[in-house]
Image 1 (spheres, rainbow, N blue to C red):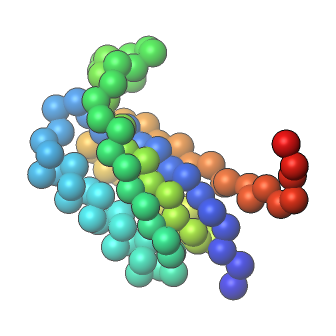
Image 2: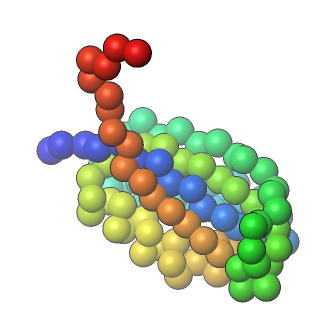
Length: 103
């Protein structure tokens, strides 16, 4: 099975506590591992001001996850995030690996 590298950033509501934040990170890490994902790396980007309001929120807590998996895994994780009431926005991008480029 071919695994691609993905970067996912999701934004939590600003009133989410640190405990809920960590619980969500652990939930998604275990979901990715259980479905064949590898090399999971999580970075908490902190609270930031949004460029425009999203569902009446002007701030959000950013979390970045990098992992390797397939397209079905991405769909599964995004579907789970869609129904989570604490997440106001998410985005997943496929990372291309650059081979043999000399700058």
